[in-house]
Length: 76
Image 1: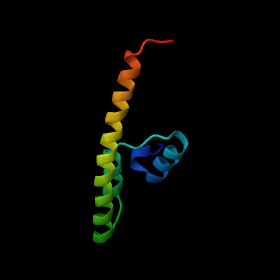
Image 2: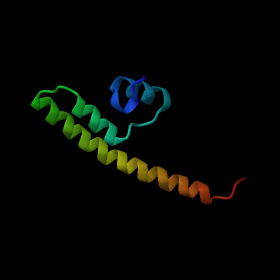
Image 3: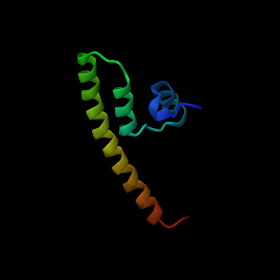
Image 4: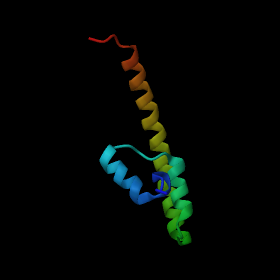
């Protein structure tokens, strides 16, 4: 059985580089939880994850706004 990208950071990074799609923050959180990290590294990654989650939300909202405007615009 193939590993799903949201459980494999290597595959997620490959997909990000190939498709320019960002993994859902829930999947990033799961990746962090599945690693054997020192407390210091876990804290550092958690801080980075919080920033990722914030920015992901902003980009998602901007994307929805942009797509909404495009959907309302008459085609040429």
